[in-house]
Length: 246
Image (cartoon, rainbow, N blue to C red; front, side, top):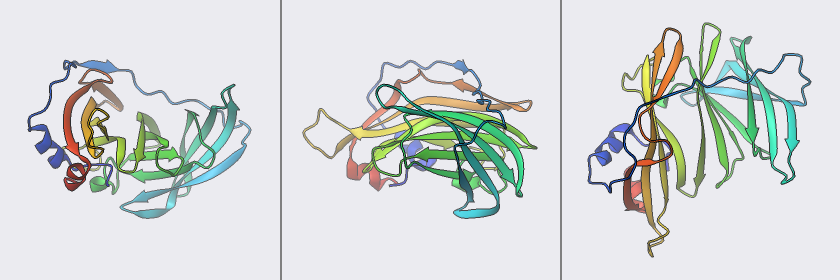
């Protein structure tokens, strides 16, 4: 199953009859994502090299070095790590960003690709990074960066999970279809089992957290267009019905 349904298919579903939810539409300005600052002279525990892909092809000149600089476990053995990400373009370091991940799993793997979507990845200043344990049922942390003229911004951050065709993910919608848009949208999509139905193949598709992004000056701003963490769309369907629309 692809984890990013086509926009026009989902738009068609959105026009069908749905069960009302109690989440009224709102408009809320969200605070910009802050980049964690980690000094260049911070002691490095280990370094992973992250290849950056465009249309399935790994770049030979662009990559990211993920430096682990701190790791701690709490009394419940939940591990929190800090990484400094050094971005290289044409084999030259252009920017850095720090990130902290709570609940980090040993053996987690990194992935990175250019573009908001696979349809407009070429020459895109957007860069998506994902890290998580490569198995069903594990959460992955995702980061959307905007890197242009050596200026790096963390535009958005979210979590995803997939388990045998069920799960939750982020759908990014770029109406302009170009690689460097001035605005775009996203929403959280989830397809989970319907625990109240005796049919084990019955699931519930929901959309939540609709967000509009707009470039103002040289900074990305975002507005939450729906009630936070509450579904504004809900539709029941079987597992096969959901996958047949992909």
